[in-house]
Length: 279
Image 1 (tube, rainbow, N blue to C red):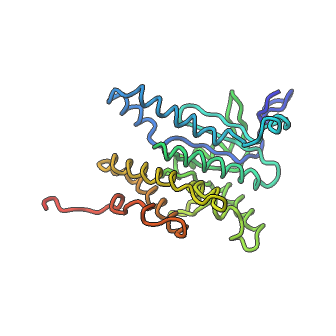
Image 2 (spheres, rainbow, N blue to C red):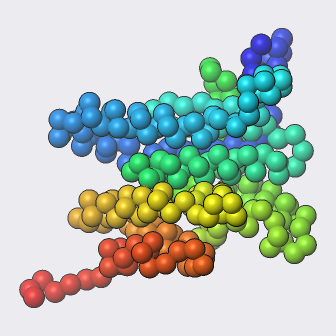
Image 3 (cartoon, rainbow, N blue to C red):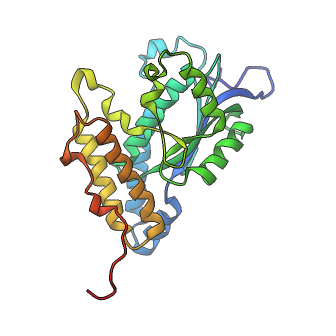
């Protein structure tokens, strides 16, 4: 029996209202082209494969012991991946709040672990009908999420399209005041109005027991700084990593009790200013 929650034995494929995410790796095509030019295809392949393999465990590992995992008839979600494209769907059983909780945690860990390995993820989340199996991915959720990723996400962020924002706003109304809702830590609003996943929250998942994961946070800082240096002469790409640098420093400010100047990215690395042609 298939553990895919979209597959019902003896029934035709059927759309289910879902929390659905479409994402890909920023600059994947350029990565392959550059590797070919430099003659580093084998090394690049191995590095990318290792990063994806380790990070996908954050998406696939439910944290349950085998005896409990086998107890349920179906998994909570379905995942399908091809090269740099990954889609995940969580069939909604009520109001999507539980599915959001699972999605936010897994996606944040995946995005963070990819980032510290030098691979930055962009994507979009929708709440709409979807179907996922080994043969097909289909539904309005795919359309919404794909258009969100390709037209609205722009920077290395996983945004919430309108259908996901509407669901999140409904959940916020359950809490009085709404500031007590868990979504408040999971989601941020960008300067362009887009809501996006606050993936750096991953470093605080053991905040009360062990404090922040400082070593990993500094790895994130270093990964962003390397990208800024690498793409300094390519403004459209450099701007995307400047966005991450700004987000990284905002997160430091948001949790100033944990993070100091040594955790921040030097603003001189990502500020954009003109200069004289002769100095």
